[in-house]
Amino acid sequence: MEETFPPLDATDLRLLSLLQADAAQSNQALADAAHVSPATALRRVRRLVDSGVIERQIAVVAPALMPTALTVLAEVTLDRQGAEHLQAFEQRAVVEAAVQQCYRVSPGPDFVLVLWLPDMPAYHALVQRLFTDDANVRNVKSYFAVHRAKFDPKVTVPTTVA
Image 1 (tube, rainbow, N blue to C red):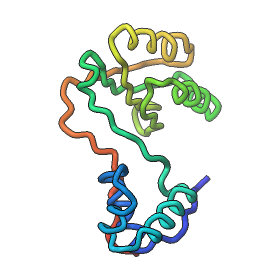
Image 2 (cartoon, rainbow, N blue to C red):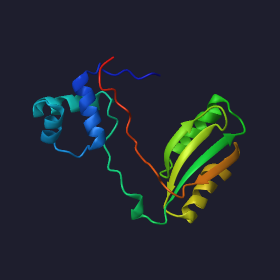
Image 3 (tube, helix red, strand yellow):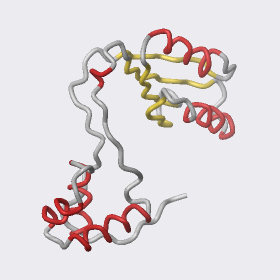
Image 4 (cartoon, rainbow, N blue to C red):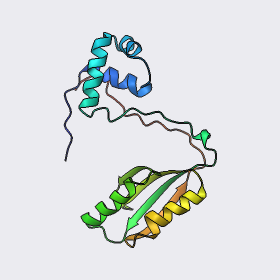
């Protein structure tokens, strides 16, 4: 099912870009930077949230807070790839707190997961729950991040309306 969003104008696009850079700024600062009144900024942001254009606003925590934490990219290949099997694995994966991102991919493995775990014992427990205990998981290939050169979850927002 494809999502439909309200039409966006140049002001909406400016607000989205500014919020992705700093969602914690005050409404007044946001309005000033977008060159609109505070009431307009507030109304527009509420509309963007209510319509689902803005999924949520979060705080990104520095990974150095947990120096033993692991970031793992895992490729998962299932034995049976029928729609019901793909859906069943996906449902199990997305409820795991350690799974930060879950993608069905093609070609290659069936899924790529981005995992964040506090330590190696937590990783082993997740492997047991999510991969080993699932008779339909044929292969898992995990990559352990040793250095984060860039992390930027923002979406590139066009500067003008098409």
